Image 1 (tube, rainbow, N blue to C red):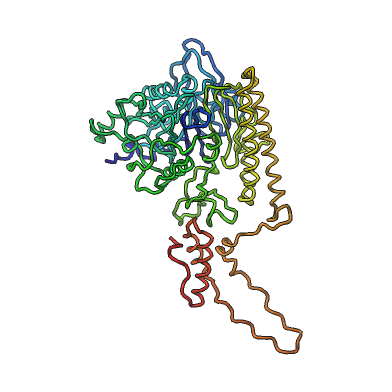
Image 2 (image 1 turned 60 degrees about the vertical axis):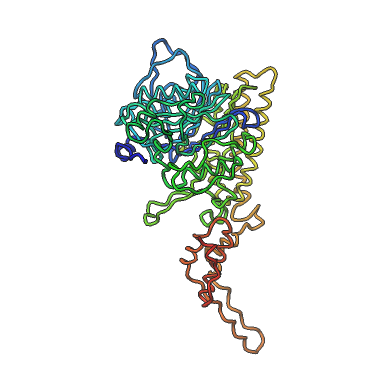
Length: 615
């Protein structure tokens, strides 16, 4: 039975919130990876004004009796200012200081950790990835129209400060949310949240949403089997909870009590957490499911369906699954760069991709009110603020964070030890409104935008740079893992800072090389990189101006009469409709047939285009 919509009007909930990202999270258990580490990833797929800074928060011994302040984070730039938590958040002229909306009890000692919008990894290798989800309940924050104190931003940071194990972090976040109230992002993505929480031995899926009163929380967690992988893409995935298996399931009492009180569940029957507490996919159908299918496909699990009726009520995809082969760190990079290449959903082909195969899809203009529709939601995304992969392990130097600012397709993942004492300088600068040559975020953003001039060609240059620098990063990690004596935190910090400087310099050199190589439609100002035939046909190139008329022969004889003109094909609208309906597979053949069909019909012949080509 489908629970009703939120008790409060959606407009009232959304009005009280800041923008949030629509993120994709992956995880792999220690027996599913090639090196025995636990892997957890996160892409922060925000929109305008992202805060892409990577920040180091040092360990602290607060004075006895001190409380821990809680802030209402904007999730935009700057996410905090003047809070003294990190040098990232030092007061800046023109930026008002962030004010606490409340406090929780402090602790005697907090651990050092790295954060972006959410906590990422602490010195003990506790790691987190986040994905906003829809939920049947929503509420607002204290001071912003509601009574809830804690967001997922704050919960993830508190977990970093106070926990060393994933299980403990899940229970800590759940208990604090029950005690102080939880509020979600509240943008179009929804008012609930999911985290993957991992340590050196295991990973957990954690789901949370507000309770119906807006003063507590409903949460559940499921352990990822050691030889499995999992995918969360802006929708809950936990299904039936085994309340008698504390080794693999954790949950709040409210999971059952609220469902029973609302008439959504009866004791003695299975409780499907997603069917009861999710509000389904948002934005459009397949917004979440396509990414889950696409990521599992990249893990070698290719027998899953790509179509379904309702992802909320149909358990189409498994909560976790065993990959076809052991997963490597760079496999995770590849999944976050995926645009469904080689499938019928390939976003690098078709008219929308243009002649150069650009997979990026932008919003319609404000004036395009008469056109309704949706683009496929890919895993890789041009509006990503940051992507990270944490390789959490107890061997060598310990956990390693791989961090990439801006879109995964054009970023370079930079490694950093979880025990490092500082973020390399290029990754601490990321004001989205002021270009800075000292900023890694701007270097990758610049490359992404320049590459669009000849995307399929320019991306070969980008990918070559990524392959080389990420291989260098892996070699550096391996070297530091086996160094004798073991490097100190200061030495690790210095080694990774030197590599980060190399990445920055390489990517600032890349846009000039792309322009130099592909400017004005030539390659190295020689070979013409012209439009492909299918695109010329699709845009009506054959219907352009005709060749010049034949000139009279110098012979005194009269010129021969011109040959009969071919039937004109001037129904551009029909051709565009036909080409627009062509599938990704066999697109070029279908587009050419559309033009040929138009010309034949103009000449009175029967159509050539098979209806099997245009669906």
